[in-house]
Length: 508
Ligand SMILES: [Zn+2]
Image (cartoon, rainbow, N blue to C red; front, top):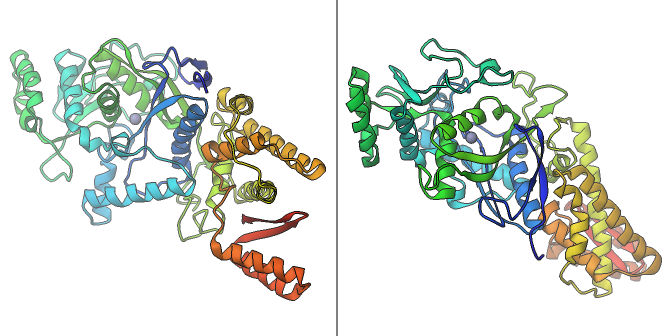
């Protein structure tokens, strides 16, 4: 592909479709984007994974369209309080105490599970420093709080450092003031939020400002202007970062190389993603802190809607907080489904719409998945029999097929077009006994780079051996042996079908 193709997404705050032009991104030709990842204090459910799938899908779409991408998805391992605002216990601490474990063990266990859940639906998470933990960026979060304190955009109270939203004109409907956050009488304005919370000695996670040399200059400035007791105690006081600061600190550090960012006044990334729960508080607070610190965090903000179960909010009491993989019946795999049926289900719903999960609907998605696999098996078998060469796909053909994706990531429409394309190929095979090598290449390319539904599976040696034996038995008209070989193949969750030119096998 010569130059990357433009695409559009729905920007939540401008309430409009916004176009991503490769010449107009922060770094031309590169899509820099960030998604708010999981708080690893417990198992991630199917709804949490929709947000991760969303980031991965935008990544795949952009790459298909010829873009280079830089995606960061964080792991929250500190600061996220039970109340989601500034109230309640730290989620990690609570979980560690209730499971009688160290915070590190909790983080390790649930981060490991997050990887497993993501892998089960072929999500390719960012690796290394692009999957950062908040605790590795404490120094940057401290500087963020201290800098705002020195410029008067934050104030100090006995229990922490708070962002001062009094100048931010938050009186509009839908703004922080209307989100029902708990208003504590320690904060001055309802829209204020904690940048840093003081904790006592007994806290499981805690840091002091005097641990880092870089905080000294800010401390000096602060003490010169204010020498009250709380301020004097500040460098030596235990504390933890507020949840809304970590993304700001990590975005600056990972995309621009430092905090504060080198170039002020400019956006750091092109796109910030998250679930719809972040629209009113978490992301607005990220925007406020960044503006007050002299930079624009992201050019665009895009959110995916929630997953509902049985028509309502998932709830533990109703027993419908489902996971993708697990042993028990509260998971998709434990229920006997192929996890990739859920991947297909995610694609069957536009990200701007809520997805109502039911087991009946998942059955439909799984049937459709098996249908795709069956079609592929037939096409691949024909290609093998007729020795159709695997060539490079045709860029123009890809461009036409991915048009729905480029237009606000319309995955349901893309699936329809993909089905039509597959049907056309099958039609030509059956009627004219022709398979165009470019069409085959395009089909395989879209599966490999975007669909990732295991449509072109690696068939185990054992299955191939059984299938060949079955062909031999049939040639000898030994139908009893042929049937028993089919049973053996099906027992291993594969299906076999005969065509005029040979057989095809797919996973079922
Ligand atoms: Zn965030």
